Length: 265
Figure 1 (cartoon, rainbow, N blue to C red):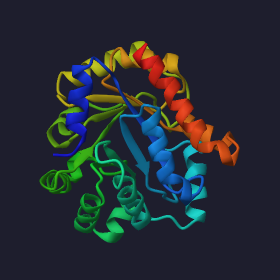
Figure 2 (cartoon, one colour):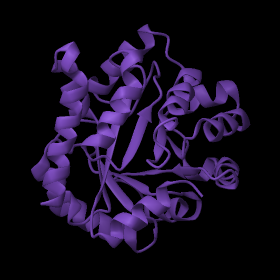
Figure 3 (cartoon, helix red, strand yellow):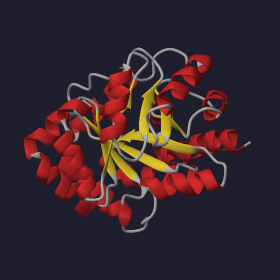
């Protein structure tokens, strides 16, 4: 079992919503990735999504695209991402880490090698944007056999059939993309999110996280009324972009702390 299920179970027992944060590995510099991971946890993050840099991140808006470009200038690849997780695990054995990215880097090293390295590094699962559930049952099963969760995305356009496939093959939690568009675009319609999440729960028994558009504490708190987790990525990366270099770590911690306070208030 990965660390994800017990984390959600513990939070539910405390009547708390999980806070999931996303950063891109290697951005804004490789030396900052592990300190940032620890700072996010210190600020109140319950699950860390660590983005695998990719040259064509199709689901990402301009903010995360820029983060990928910065990381790729440092030649950050999957091996480096696994190394970051291993280093993080030296002093944090409990916080779930989910690798988020695209199929190409996984296919390059092979699915079996990816699973082996992810497990060895201490990762808990993966979100692979362009691995639809109907095409990766074997991969999902192999991940599960190795104590890793394959987390699938659901969108406002997802059919009931797709929701059922996610229910069958997904692990950890299901990630509901609240907007028709890329990360960081638009504003969330919380009433629509509530309706969609309710419909998803008819088929999916996993916890449901909501992301793509949560930018502040008020929105996070509104979404938390209907979701088991809120996911923040683009707005956090904007914080990293605008903070002075010597204040990046503390700026990240303070931003996440503010969201956590809003969720718990």
